[in-house]
Length: 84
Image (cartoon, rainbow, N blue to C red; front, side, top):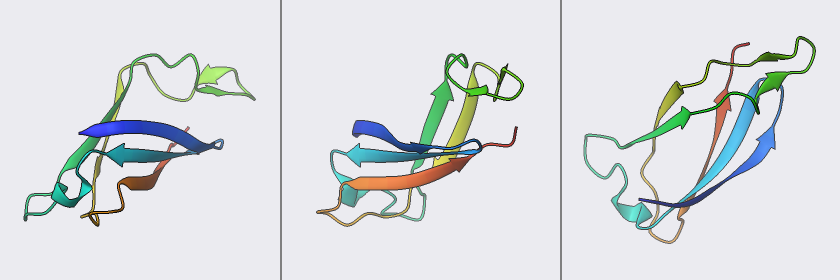
């Protein structure tokens, strides 16, 4: 389960997130890898400044596989790339 998350960087085409898990040693420990699913409920905070248009539609879903984690390392950082 995700304990917390924060945005580390937000660039024109990339957002880098850091996610903290309760029990990271149990993530993707079998042949079936766990996925992190991110749903953007509202797109008003993700605007392309040059056109003032949203970067993506409300309700956009991004899924990423979470690699196996070490027991003491509960923070996972991943960059999400957007195609405007």
